[in-house]
Length: 274
Image 1 (cartoon, rainbow, N blue to C red):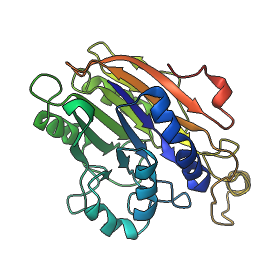
Image 2 (image 1 turned 180 degrees about the horizontal axis):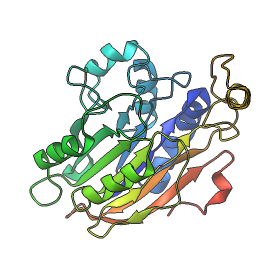
Image 3 (image 1 turned 60 degrees about the horizontal axis):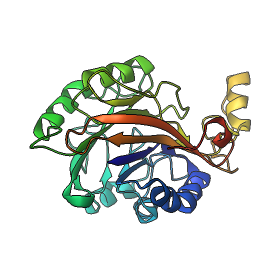
């Protein structure tokens, strides 16, 4: 069973790259299930119902959101109408939508997807992601009698917190993958009990930028310490960044995980995905 996860879609460049490349990527790799994070897809801040629908139409099975889940007020209503869009499960008890669901996949299989926010260095005091994910995964266990695969996105600043989550869920998830920092890490691995892990999948955006934003304003703020204009997403050719995981359909354990980079500035840094 082959799974694809794509990191944070940033701005129009990221959206256009997903629309252009995801259909062929999914077919070419023979993917059974695709998850795309889209929390920065609307001008770099949040996502709208229309944009989520476009990403789903391009070949995603699930669209995930992070700490910017409701930056666009449209999403407050859109997420209630579209069950394939997930916000973090620990963002708040009264938040609309859901942070964990089980979805149908080809050949009668089922895939559980969960999203949680980390707490280290984050601006808001979110609920404990470890206990939240523990409860969710106990409701839909991996393997015989449960689901065929479990994909967990840990949306967090701290690499240590994301790595800790990978080990906490080792053997209970097919994939634990970090998002939020927009830079792909070089630690893709299958953990001891069969969970694929990468601390950050990177972004789907223009890497001739400062984590997806046009360079001038971030540079001004770093150099002068003073804000100027609003951040705007970089508009050059985008790289799709994520991971590909091959899983045992009987147990849900990851057999192999490979970084995925397609198009844009980073595409030549890795060999083609398997």
